[in-house]
Image (cartoon, rainbow, N blue to C red; front, side, top):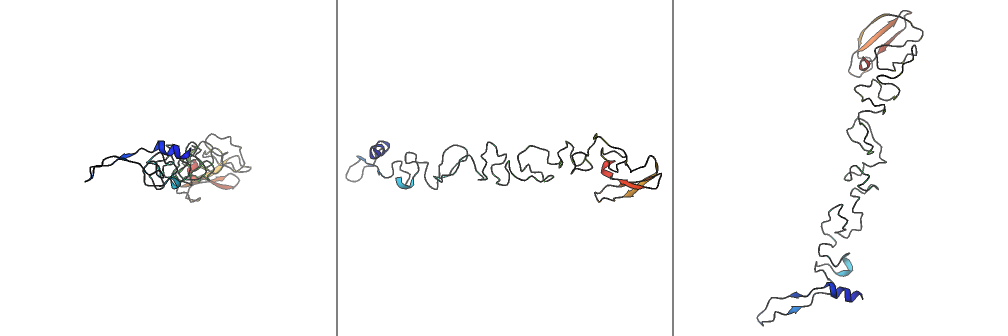
Length: 197
């Protein structure tokens, strides 16, 4: 049956007349039915001359043109096909990847803002503590706990009810912004990060 299918797939090729005047059809090579030069034993589709080992293989067309046996829908071989992989040309980008904030790369394909490290909806430039999702503009702020929760200019010093003085003190926290020193009525001091002002 296999031989019959090869004969059906094989079309004799007309030969040009030589000096004998013989221009009859010559039978094709039954071991290479598609005439691509690759024998049946090595050709994964001997009915298609564009499919053979070493052929150029276009991704995502469903055809294993180079007979490599790889997944035509998974170019970067990271275990995720193009339907769920937001960059199927980069094996470090896939839904299970570790995603470092602020690098401009959505490595885990989550679609989240790469500039919002704590995922509270406020990017680093607007959030004075982008490592803590409970601290952001508009967050509830407990008084006298010593934590600036709302990114406001108020500093909640334990036991303090009034401020005696305040002033700019330079870049205390090293973020490139001038910070504010606040001294409470009882002498307790603290500073408000410049990014929170």
